[in-house]
Amino acid sequence: MIDKSIIEAGNAARAADLAVDYDTLGERLDRRGIDINAIKDKIAAFGVAIPSWGVGTGGTRFARFPGPGEPRDIFDKLADCGVIQQLTRATPSVSLHIPWDIAPAEDLLSRAEEAGLTFDAMNSNTFQDHEDHPLSYKYGSLSHTDAATRSQAVDHNIECIELGEKIGSKALTIWVGDGSNFPGQSNFTRQFERYLDSARVIYDRLADDWTLLTEHKMYEPAFYSTVVQDWGTNLLIAQQLGEKAKCLVDLGHHAPNVNIEMIVARLNQFGKLGGFHFNDSKYGDDDLDAGSIDPYRLFLVFNELVEAEADPDFDPMHMLDQSHNVTDPIESLMISATEVQRAYAQALLVDRAALGGFQQENDALMATLTLKQAFRTDVEPILAMARQETGGAIDPVAAYREACYRAAVAEERPAVSGAGGGIV
Ligand SMILES: [Mn+2]
Figure 1 (cartoon, rainbow, N blue to C red):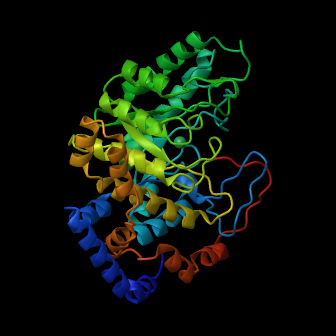
Figure 2 (cartoon, rainbow, N blue to C red):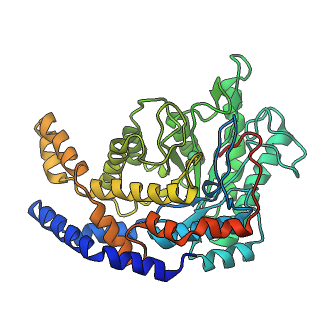
Figure 3 (cartoon, rainbow, N blue to C red):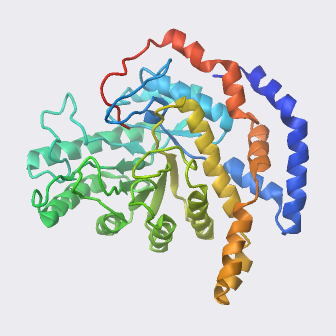
């Protein structure tokens, strides 16, 4: 963890400027009928989960360039996630990926507690072969033509649920690499029937307070078709399986220019929006840092989420899911968590009564300006004040760099090879 005195000294040096900036923004928002403290409290209560695999350097299918002090195992990953939470107070939970993070439940629990973390959704993995799985997933897993392979994949998902139950998780996320690379290779209908049959066995194993999240992806690793290619198929799965099944939207898993905020609205309208994987993209599933390319789109997604918050039962899960190839993953995850909070804060500033009126009157210009007014507001003082008041750092990256955390862990963690392709 970072020495508290570093955080306190950094905050002390910045506190006076922050107080002025916060008060100034508070006055401006007050003129718009908005209570800045109410927004700040919502931001302070908002959390986005860190994926355990995100704290390691990612890569492409060409290569991976690991940095110093790479986490060696899940316990190193929990330590890194603890630092992110300590400085940002925006990432209270970690999402595990099995088998990469397999460890005894009691050890996971005690180390998470030390790091001030809880566990978010469990993630199964049947997109690669496992040492202790005799059958290969080369031609699919839950939808494989071979019943024994499907059964092996189902059993793996049930093991993920069993570990999750011991560590306080309440959700299983399934993403499969199943699909085809050639027209004619797979029968679309039979393949999806097999997927649904397998998913039903997993679903039936879930406790009543668990959620099954299924994640769609239009391509990769299969390049002609994927079994769960888009939100339509994802919605069909959730509807076929039942109440506990919901859809997970990964922002990078769509064709370029798809209207993702509209997908969010549709899924929510029918009670099937389960959660998000945040990242950003320029060309495809680039897994770039959230908010780094198109922050307006992130805002528009949150605009739908704030609209949905009117329903007290609305409680989607939020997680970052991105690949850090050229930055320190801890720094990228801290900035990304703040970008997600920023989009949420901006969306909270939308004058919804005015927007509804402009929509009713078909005043397209004023409706869109209502959104722009919220988006253009610099909410950084709100985010920084929320961090300061909850014990985090006003400037998380500055505190992290000053603490030389990466150099310190590099002393204990041996350098790892960058050979071979990396994936997240
Ligand atoms: Mn994802």
